[in-house]
Image (tube, rainbow, N blue to C red):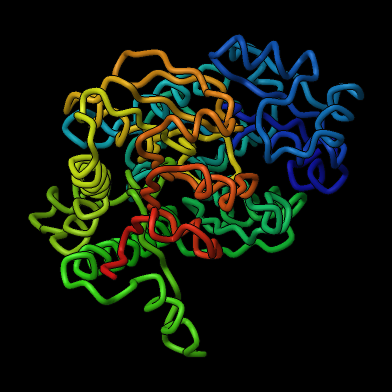
Length: 439
């Protein structure tokens, strides 16, 4: 039976390497549609969690996940022994950068080397990890072809970037359009067919390189625009008399030619922070400098330092030393209403405050019970009236919907708001110092 027929008849066995924010939702979606799906992860705790029916990704629908595990359409392994028995294999592993901000595709390479050991004819391999152009053809393809099999003749290879937005209830794995670029037209065709079994809209492009660059464009677009409003927010602070949040809202009334982006304490998550440096590294290989893109990334990375200085400035006007000041950080996830702390700017703010001498830092986050910052262990403090009242400075770094901002401002002595979370608070506004508000 051909792979195409297996896919159409739901008889294809699906493998997903990497059971994180991208891989687990993908695996659950296939399993929920009746495909026998195997997740592979070197983290045995994730494997045990999946096999026991314990969901650890908030975006995965609990009922759908437990049903798939119960029906045994979803299982997990901490090894690659099953590769030869699979028909479609997705690679969804991390792609961080090094200390020197150069791409680290070692997880992709390691996963590909393991897959190559069990590669067989009619396999479809799809890389989904965000990376720089030519990763699929320049790194994954040669490793797989060491098996003696050839792409396009013996097996299929494609790149289809992930489009996961943690916490987004509207756009999920199933209804978010995806892009696919195969090494050959037939590779593209088969990869599109595989994804069409679970995704409502699949868009094909001419090559993996186009798909890889497209993904970088998506995230760099956001990085550049966020940097623009972050820089303008700093200017508004310097000038006085202008609220940057009001400026953005006013500009957003234009029905064409403008998309609203908002300032904040920095950017987090996996893609927006990292992708500009992936492209910068690649550009240098071609004697090209991505000056504009790199400057935007640096502007965003500077925001936690700017927020730290705001806190320092405000505490310096209080009758307490910075070292002794009680600082309460509100929200440490990288965005509202999620438990994802990857590259969270709030963690950087805490690290910088501690490095500058603050010794009474506490935090609250309903989604993150404990965390380590610069080697120090912190636990989320219960958000009580007493905690807020005794804090010399409350710093809002993540604007979780569950927070009662009227309650917070009412009981706080001082609030540094980096997210405009207190915009609807009427009473006690004299206590609020808002990022991007020079009023």
